[in-house]
Length: 323
Image (cartoon, rainbow, N blue to C red):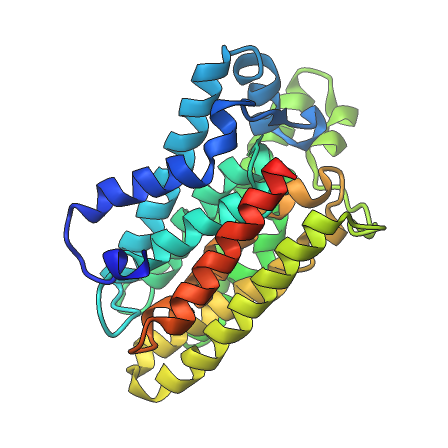
């Protein structure tokens, strides 16, 4: 199975779609449920009022379109910035596996939709490296993050990521940091101006991110433990091969991977800091997680390890939905 995705043939786009349909086979029996807490932002509001009421087949198609488009976009990002030695569809392959492997990522949630915003923000950050006049792009990045927080509050976890990413990608210049900060603040400035002019200023605090520190893994069920276990094995394997490849990357690509590593590290704490949706909100970690796990599938010359990782994940996916 893995060898099908190791080249850059366009037919792999069809294979990605087929893989998603197969791994999410249970959705054709039991359609995905819509998980949303209206207090988490506009995305959750739209899910509750416009998506949840859709017929079952529409929910299945919406989920498949969302997941496949995100996987392909992620794959295109890594190819565009030459972050692997060879171009393949393995990042998209890994992304699809992860969405089917972990039950909390196998439903329609605001966190899963917000992952599209995470990919968009990362693309913008990577483009900063070779910009001679980066202030416009930096302002746009801050603006996108600010608007994204209004759409889905847990994306506020990206504020430290974007700030430190700027330090990794660009040499420190105070005006550039101030421009980024202006981008963060501007959506909230206009929102406050609106509620103030409409005599609703006390309600402004409802639009600010709310921290809710809880442990989302209290007495996890067996399927959650198994999914986390195989993800941990895949991630450690990916880290091992990623370290082997580091010396072959140019400085620019090393900085890109530094940003992704920072994103992965910080997003691990996102379900704890913003726990209103428990582990459903953790879907924003999918992007960096799939990137590093891709090394476990792409680097070994022999297919024994990649195939073992894939089939072990496939068995757990079947167990999760048939046991």
